[in-house]
Length: 250
Image (tube, rainbow, N blue to C red; front, side, top):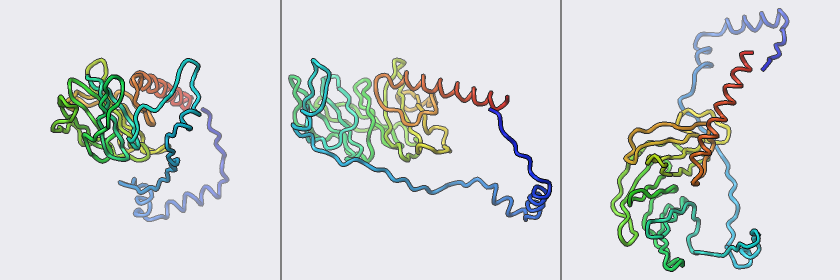
């Protein structure tokens, strides 16, 4: 990257130099101080929710040979769904602060019931008979009882980065048996102070051995392919940074 440098006239440059030299040391120090904390205001526009009526569902387009129909109702704002070993569904709602159990019998859902209430709960993952779930800053697990309810919880992490515009943490277990956690950026155009923002974290199921495996990820979403996409995105981001640094040197 080439930079265009405009020469300044002698007198203005000397005047600017004299002005800086004449400032008291306290003023210069104040100008260079890095603030320990800042206050920002964000405005998020959310679409008005619409009821999933039969008419609206019928108006949705799907490829030939497929159909779309209402499977369950009354869950208000469902976000993440995981399937238990017995086929039952666990559904989280961050807005409601709940995890609901949706029992499935012969392919049909029964009445949903709340099995956990916790503010900002969002991502979930099931591993060895335990339901792992995450809020903005904490990760927990609870044993899944025979009736689908949850036993006493254990907290394994309590210091994830603070959230901003991207508070929806998600969880997934990789083929290596480790727990992966997505942590979004504070906003869409922020200089992050915490190195764990905008990253994919990895740790043991007990919360130890925590490390960053991918960074530069604005807000990863949960799916089976998220881990591979995150690694690929991190590789592309690192390559772009190397190219930029090389261009600046040249």
